[in-house]
Length: 117
Length: 117
Image 1 (cartoon, rainbow over the protein chains, first blue to last red):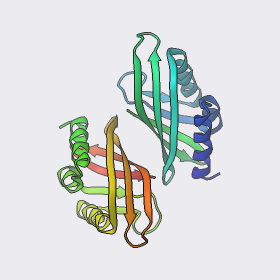
Image 2 (image 1 turned 180 degrees about the vertical axis):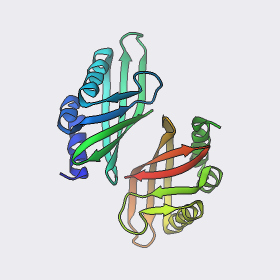
Image 3 (image 1 turned 135 degrees about the horizontal axis):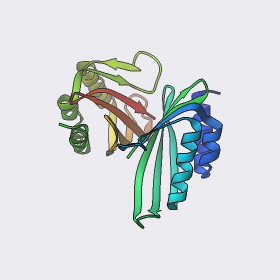
Image 4 (image 1 turned 30 degrees about the vertical axis):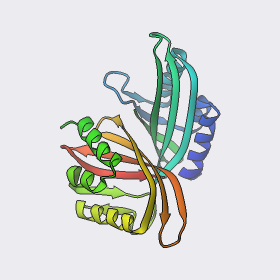
């Protein structure tokens, strides 16, 4: 499977809201995930840890709308453009924002994801 | 100047259509530029070469609309979302597309730019 094929299927799953399935299918066991923040949540290592971060996010946000646009390519990397409209459950704050995911593929798996906002 | 300050000023110049000024002000002499293609245009090394690539692009496209949205941050990297509506002068083909620039900053200058489409 080429990077383009992987990315198109990955984003097709995201567009259906199937974030868990997308990660289960394509994240490498050794994936490293970088958020755009300081502190202990900034870097997350390993497929299980990334899955748990996703579960935490889902549990702590009420999602009004979430769309994924892409993939956009350069070599073995691709970009996905997310639009999210959520309420943070703890604070009640409503957030509407664009966010970008930069994914790096090696040997048919995503070995790094890096988020920009 | 922090990466955030640099990026905000850089994108402010892009939003005014001042791509030359943005590159002159913030590109490192050693900048490397990666397009999303194969062949000799794929990688461009050095501030002068990147400026010439920009001049070639401007000379060969009729721009109907070009917008820049961003910057979006992660550490010393930032993403800019471009929308371009152009006619390729040689072929007459009209292209409307989203494109993403990923910029890497070191010591107050942009040392790498990488385009996704």
